[in-house]
Length: 432
Image (cartoon, rainbow, N blue to C red):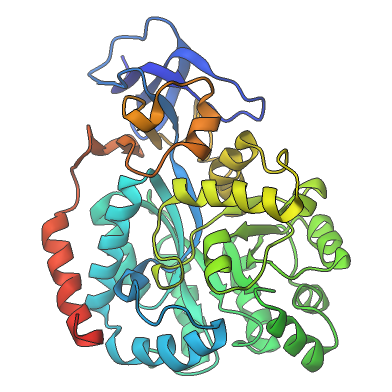
């Protein structure tokens, strides 16, 4: 007898074929899926009624800075480098503490749970506190201490940060929810030596290696002036570009860059709302997909988005590329849903664990309500997920077999207290 059965809904396994199981169920034993089927579900210790909604894999936010919920709405409407150097970096140096990271990360987890994200990839400081917040919330997380060449809120030099990353790889090796990763910030904030040393750690512990790459035209020009190659070309030149690498943004790519990414097996995280807000440009996602590059989806941090709503990010991704390419068939709904689930999971090296509904995979499952007015009538589940949802339709969230939200009720986070703690921090940052 399974521990849990989620039934009475349309199951989307995200199998690459657009399969929809109209009267389906997902059975769970422990923290893993034991069966995906149709018709009468097996008896179980506990059941969740999807009430005719959509049962699907949890969304995977492949790139964010979760604690930056603390800076939501802070220093908006500025170019990337002005925003970073004149506002974000100084604010982080002053106000980011281990306690602030815990509460900012907890607020992020609440926001992500409510909009159907069950796993996220985070680059920030004091990630022990980020891990504690994620564990307390029951949210799956891929975490990496930000690697930069200059002092940050942690007051560590880059050698200490590298050592800290290696220590975290050891500490989190067997955690059921927390995965270590190594994440140098970008080629313009990390020396070539640091990037190479970071990759050695990622290889040694077989973890994901993520880096901001080719986000702006100015970044590409700077790296070309300093190294004679594009940022993608620099990773290839350093011998670090392979299937373990995940490139956040990847907006300004040459055809040669795309070939390098495809040949190496490296993945890309598309962050359309952040790229639009900072006027970074439109990533060549259609070309990347056509070339066979794994592409996931991410929100980036709340200071440059300003939300962590992956359902909204899916809508933006689909619409942006249609207008950018003057082609309504580009980035169809099935493709975008796959990016937000299977694509993100593969990019993070977790394709065998999450991102689809299959027996043996981790039981990260969400139920989307289809009774709200904006979801009626329903002709195509994929279409509704991308074009009709607004993020409030997520009814139930199960992560690793544990229910963290049921019938819209948050079960693992005290949202009222968390909001109060974050407001107290925000008063120090900007007097709000």
